[in-house]
Amino acid sequence: MDACYQIDDTSQIISPGMIIFKDLLEDNLRKMIELVGDPSRLRPHCKTHKMREIIQLELSLGIKKHKAATFAEAEMLADTGVKDI
Image (cartoon, rainbow, N blue to C red; front, top):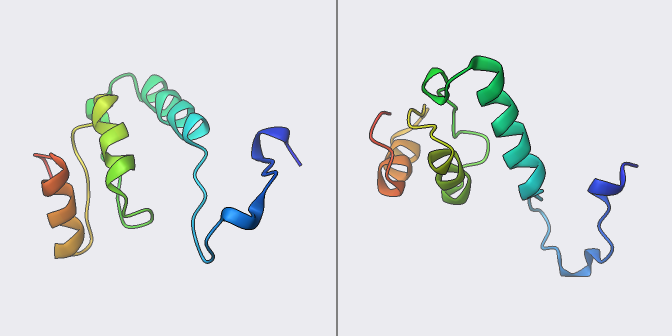
């Protein structure tokens, strides 16, 4: 297993749950932006993670457009500050 995915103490992890490696996520977002040339060309979908923190990270990196599949997701995006849904 890659050392960056190593979790030493799993006793504090609530299950079921989603583990996010923030540094890796941010690195992947930066690579996507580099690949497409401009964050305005990205429109990520929030249906998988449904997390304000990830939306805030995307906004901080200049990703301003997002997709939603439900009214609840669209509401969460709007409440987080997304203007283009």
